[in-house]
Image (cartoon, rainbow, N blue to C red):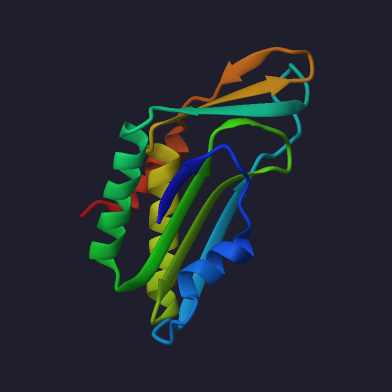
Length: 152
């Protein structure tokens, strides 16, 4: 399941949706990313983050990443939810849920999906500071280095 939406999500509900009635799942791994507050260089604390995407293209890329994860690991199910719009510190941004018969596959697939979401998914993030200034978040070299470990 892949969703790009402005609305919040409930982690417990999404786990239940993925696993309800299933006895072939031995491990469920979740990752929830949230908006962090705190310093944003010299502009002050982050008061909001705005996430934008390219409709159609974003969902297609998420489906491609999900298909690749399923090809690499024996998964019983996956859920990827990414929010868009203006979010505040503490708000949920992204949820990745992976389910497998065994924990290693579920953990590795969740890490893989998040590494690709962070670097390849077509989302743009703008952080707004307390003084009203806003900066678009650039890709970081460290994220690209982490992604390199998944190259075949």
